Length: 48
Image (cartoon, rainbow, N blue to C red; front, side, top):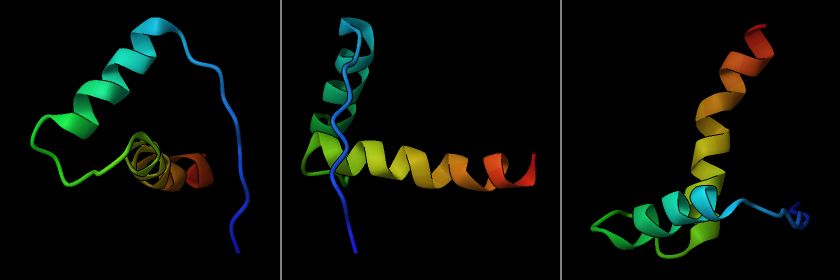
């Protein structure tokens, strides 16, 4: 099951996302990149 989350970003953070989903990465859109970042961080959050 999925749900939607809208998030406002600073211009700097948006630029990071835009660069990383366009420049020869496996991501086809900004949401895929953001989801991957969250998946990477989740184990560290749960371990704290």
